[in-house]
Image (tube, rainbow over all chains, first blue to last red; front, side, top):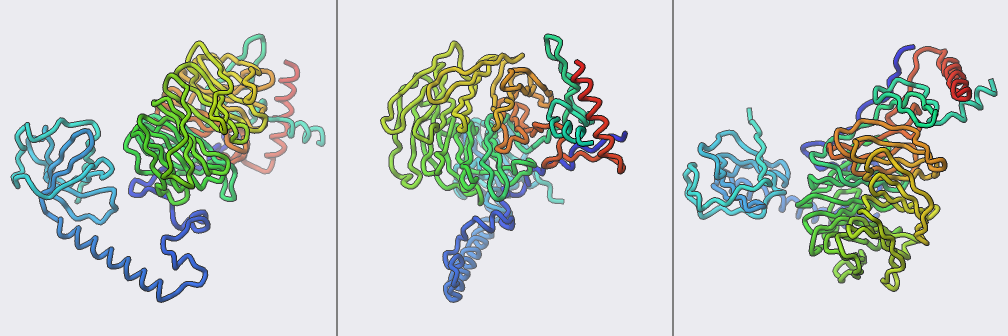
Length: 159
Length: 366
């Protein structure tokens, strides 16, 4: 007797680039209210819908312009557990969960790395674009707080 | 042929017909009783990067049933209950998530975390709906049946009841426990609350009066608690013991001793079996009526922290220190979800019948 196949396939795992909740799934389509109130109405007011679409496109353009204006600027990130990261801001329209940065400095980093890095925004408290020298060498010890375990930098090679 | 069909229908887990699942070898029961070789291939759900400490199933919905897992990586996940397929991750907590639950129709989720918040989520879109600040680590969350209220408990030793239709209003607070609360549940049609704490007590509270009704005291901390509404049964674990209590009177029904310290147990919806998992990394299945240990499976690479039956009883899920969830079949060899017994050739049914009769003969002679 040949050995039967007990399992058709493995359970699908998480998508590393998304938080999931597929908006095209039947459950989502059936149960999720749209964020646009006019679209949710059975008799959609086309003029109202146009206005809302215009507002969305204005917001989107504003976000992209903001991203571009931040590109290649020096930025200091304040992360949880008193970790500070200094870097050069990149422009990556991935999602709000990740920023692309280069020339990353942590207190133990004697030589700045050159590959782009991906910083997880979940660990961020806030970030600023002013107040520290443009040099890529490490700052004095008293300017850097203790590195905590929560700082996450994921190497992401652009080749 | 009719007799054989009847025998086949009566075969449940005891005849593990398809011994093709590469897992643990046979387990032997004491007192001359023997089971057949018990093997199965669990469905392993990866994705978490730290220990899985809690899990919960929803009820059965038109879209199936769902499973939520709480993990120390701070990212609770929603999965399709019968396949383990990942649906989404609830992003927002800034610390380990200690407790997670779904409402009956899986439209809402709630989580309890070390960042001193309990959060309510839209379980369809994954959006965070509410963040409820606490004064200490939150360990447990529970919806009422109508999903209008959320019960929380944690290291500040207080039970809190939030009215989700008025989230800005201050929660009702119930004090009394003298140590951190690890589990709190609604019971008796949401008229009462059961809570288990590190003070080695389980307390029953009246929702209306907010007063303590009854207390159970143990010699050691209770490791888990499950409430089965149908039959009003409370399943408690402590040490190597799995105990069953009447949830209304808190009178003990029975206790069962496991081979190893148990962290979690769950009673089958039909109350045929219960499953338990603990520090020896194994899952155990027992007969609820006879207390007989029926099956055991090794699969996890770390202690089992939580185990729960699915709402249809066809499978049970376990969460472990190894960071995985595993789904196990209740009736091994049955076609269900991603498990499919495929036998080659047209003589499959005849072959199965012969195997069935042989096994039954062996078992009856024993």
